[in-house]
Length: 349
Image (cartoon, rainbow, N blue to C red; front, side, top):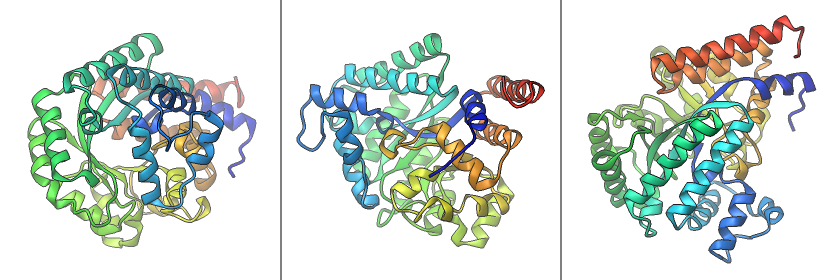
């Protein structure tokens, strides 16, 4: 359990933040999941928000994937997509998240019968409303669900490259790593990169350093989703540090899915000590009983960070993002101004 002073909690709550590794469906709050389950009854998913806490208790990573996909099954119409997307942005606004790159899996919705153009229209409508009404800037990473094979890769690439949408900035790969070669997805990443999308596959979470090397060498990853098992390979750590390839680290997620045994044994300090560029993220926050504010509190304890250190961590995410240069400068300025005001007020507003 992470215990923080009320002053630090207040600082984190007000700190302008960017989030780079957070999943679309995985960000559905218990209230929204319960609402979707009531709309589309499924015996696998409870409709009582309180019962969802027990539902989202994972035995291991494969069990997490099983329950995650059960939640995906509840998103069946474009109206569901729009509701979910805007409500995720509302939760972000409450945490003062100013910019987020949301990982979206269009294949999961399209194969369940939502027309691709309607899906894209729904997320874009929610994105524009989130920016104008909530002040949250959203961008998309369309990811391949690796467990669904090359058919899903082809479809995800088609939607991303042939259709696309204004908010799309990157192309990813999620799902289980073990037994699912990163290299088989190379043609799809090549095509997405040729179309101007950034490469951001998951690696080094459910599998070891070989997965990260494959993401770098075969998929030309510019950032790595998770990547925490890179600590098992000193040469890989040195490579990541030298190239300043950012890792999207999600501490509570790694404990919930049994990637690490507990927070005290999380390798985030080893990564930073090796010179790796680390960003802190929430992954599937309601499913893991967390949010980005709590992940910053986790990082503050594990890394012995003060307010200036937390502001630096927030700027890491801005620097590692695919936000345009004026947007990065603006958000970095907000973080600096916030820290200066906090410091000048004598540890509190």
